[in-house]
Amino acid sequence: MAGNSDPLSPRAKLAVTAGKAVAAASRAAGRGSGSVIGGRVALKLDPDLLARLAQNLDVVLVSATNGKTTTTRLIAEALRAAGPVVSNALGANMPAGITSALAGGSDAKFGVIEVDEKYLAGVARDTSPKCIALLNLSRDQLDRAAETRMLAENWREGLAGSKAVIVANCDDPLVVWAASSSPNVVWVAAGQMWKDDAWSCPSCGGVMQRPGDDWFCGECGFRRPTPSWALSGDHVLDPHGSAWPIHLQLPGRANKANAASSAAVAAVFGVPPQVALERMYQVQAVAGRYDVVQFQGRDLRLLLAKNPAGWLETFSLIDPPPTPVILSVNARGADGTDTSWLWDVDYTRLTGHPIFVIGDRKLDLAVRLEVANQHFQVCENLDEAVQAAPPGRIEVIANYTAFQDLRRRVGN
Image (cartoon, rainbow, N blue to C red):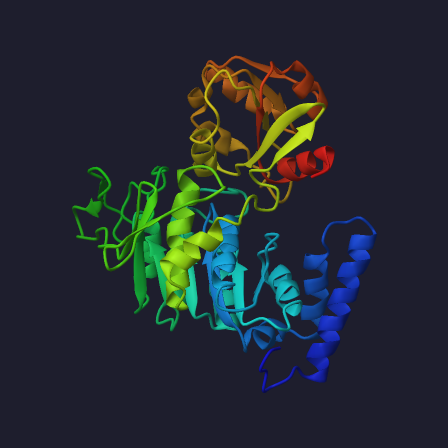
C-alpha cells in the first residue's frame, strides 16, 4: 500500500495471493468475477485480512436498501480528485467481496465500499471508516433480511459512539433513528418517495405525522432533523447555502439524491462540491444499470429494480406511454425467494405502456398485473418479448438475477 509503514504479514500476503488465484480460476471457468469466492478463501487463511487491508486507507462505507451501488460509484469518482481509490464497484458487498476488492488496491488512498445492510456494523468494526453514508431503509428480500426496524436497530447499536462522520438522509425516519446514536452526523435532505415503511415511529411505535416533506412523531417528539445539505431541483445546497448544479448522465430524481449525498461525503474528505459534482458527470452506467444496448436491431435501456421502493423510483424515470416496457422477475437466492413484495408495487403507474412479462416468476407477476388492470403479454424469453414489442426504445426493468440474465443475453 502507498505509504504503508506496517506491511502485510506473510500470512496476509499468502491470503491475498491465494484469493486472487482462486478468483482468476473462477473467471477462467466462466463463473463470474470470482471476487466472492476469492474473498472467502482469503478470509479463511487470514480472518483479520479485511482489517489489515483497510488500516492504511481512508474508508467510506455506503449502505442502503436502494442506490448504494450507484452512490458508491459516484463517491469513488468524486474522491479520485484527491487521490487513488479502491472500491467494490461491481457490488459484491458482503465481507468476502469487500476483502477481495481491497486486496486489489495496493496503491489506493481511499477505500469506497458498498456494504450490505445486514453486514454494516461488522464491516464498520473491521475497517474503522472515516465516513459512513446511510441513504434509506425499506422492505427487501423478505425471506433473508429482518424487517426494516430491526435493521435500523442493528445499525443504531452498531454505530453507537462511532468515530466516523455519518452522512445520513434526514427524510427517512428509519435512517435518522439509526444514525442518531452517533455523535457526528451530517444530515442531507435527499428525499423519500417510498414512505410505506416509515409510518410508525421507530423510536416509540407511535403514528408518524407527515405533513409535506416534514415528519414527526406526535407521541415522543422524534422528528426530522434540520439538514446541512439538500437536494433542491437540479442543484445541491451546501451548508453555506450555495447552490451547485447537478449534471449527471444517470437518469431520474433518485440519482440526483445519490449525487447530493455523495457531494456531502466528498466534502468530509476536503473535495469541494463543484469538483465532486463535475467528476460525477463521468459516470454513464453502473454495473450495466441505465445502459442502452442494441439487441435484435432495437434499443433496450436496462434498469434494475429489486424491491417496491426501487420499482417506484424506476417507474418515475422511464419514457412516457406508449413506450414498450419489458418486466422480468426471478426469485432465486440472491433475489429472495419470497415474491409477496410484488403486491406492494403500484403497477397502475404503467397504464398506457405495452407491457411484456418474462423471467422465472413471470406468472406471479402476470397475476399481479391482472389485478392492477394492466394490459400485458407473457413471453417465454427476451427474444420473444422484443419481437412482440411495438416500435421505439424499450425500457427493460428487472430484479437482481433477472438483470444479470438479461445482461448475459444482450452481451453487456
